[in-house]
Every structure is written in structure tokens, then in C-alpha cells.
Length: 152
Image (tube, rainbow, N blue to C red; front, top):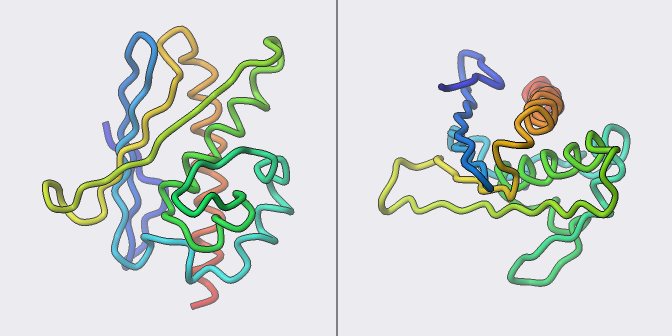
């Protein structure tokens, strides 16, 4: 199933998801113009205003940057992964110390350009939490991308 996040004459972002026993996999399709946050100058202030707790998350990246630095020049799919993880934490208020993690990957030698895979350690038992987190993340990403398109 493919879910459009943002659809305009020039851009289409879509998601598909599969949940397994202990993991969920999201496939994200992005157009070339929306691959990274590099051309979104207000990304930091947008997130600070709309989801400030995202900057407390840990980010594992080759340069060992804090997420607040990494977000300025990272893949949109990687940003989306962090949004989903943060909304999972905020939504799951009944369980303390629940650790959510994800990995974003791609291989454009084997797959179409713009396809990303996000793997989360959230399985079928947390389907409702994941659905809520995905909904909130899609709405937030849509607002960010719509805002960016209006500025261009």
C-alpha cells in the first residue's frame, strides 16, 4: 500500500509499510528535488517549533554528529525516521524506558533513484502506536515540504 504524503504537480512523496513480529519496514519514495534537507534553510527552527524533543534523540552517523547538526544536511528519509521514533516515544507514555531505534538505507545501484528503506524495532504488537506515530510524522513532514515549496 502506498500513502501519498505530499502530492503536487512537481513532487510526490509516498510510503509503504510492512510490520513483522519484531520489526517494521517502511519504503519511502522521494523525487530528486526532495532527497535531502540541505536546501531547507529553516529546518532547525521548524523542528524546534514543531517537535523540539527530536533534538534529544541519539543519531548514529559516520561523522558522529549530534542530530541537531546532522539534520541540516541529511536525507529526508532519515529525518522522517527520527520523526517516527520521536513520536513513538511521545505516544507510548505507558511504558518507561522503551528504547526505539531505526536505520535508514538505500541502494540506488539496485533500485530506482529516490527509494529509501527505514527499518524500525517496532513489531506487530505495537501496530497502533506505530500508526499514530506515522500519522503525526506524515503530517509534520507534509507541512515542512509544503512550506519549503511555497518558499521556492
